[in-house]
Image 1: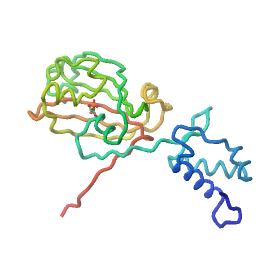
Image 2: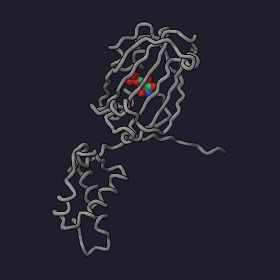
Image 3: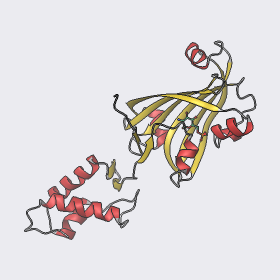
Image 4: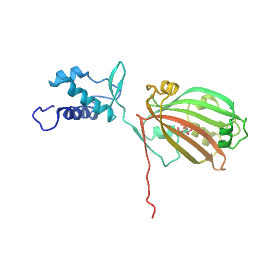
Length: 242
Ligand code: GLP
């Protein structure tokens, strides 16, 4: 409820009311919220005040705008610890979300010099190149481009690529994935990435490049992932040097 004689500014009270509606699921993620005019009429306040409250909620990530469509309730960000070497499928399942994958392309390509040195193979060696959209409960979370040498995974198929690669490597190939190194960078979605992730071109994304190795020290994969910055946040635990 909005109290006009309260010392709290009206826009702030409206923000709190909308946050509460999100918290108690009156307003659910992905749903369009009422228009500025409707809020103004409902509470007998000015549209300017409503606009200010909604802008603040957009800036704070509670709501998002889609040009020409309206303002919607944002999905809660997934919090991903950076310590463990886990797979996308494991990450989603551990949160009670259902992982799924849309394979965009599945090809064999010759290794470029850069990939060859990262995967410790000769330049020109056949690599599988997999482009996949990774979804959680049907929502696109990340777009991934994975390279794995044919030597390591000779019988990889598109069907396997539709589910978990780590499960295939560990359970079918019987290999142990031991170590991974990741580089994280902030970026914006380019046209293709935006299409894949269903965001606007230029939306913020997190780029992650992972190179993982097997127990034998042989590199397993080089993966470039583009994560939606509005769906993901990463956490890391730190110890102070003593
Ligand atoms: C994450 C990593 C990728 C890795 C993938 C494996 O998304 N960023 O480097 O290839 O997990 O996931 P899955 O086993 O579900 O295919």
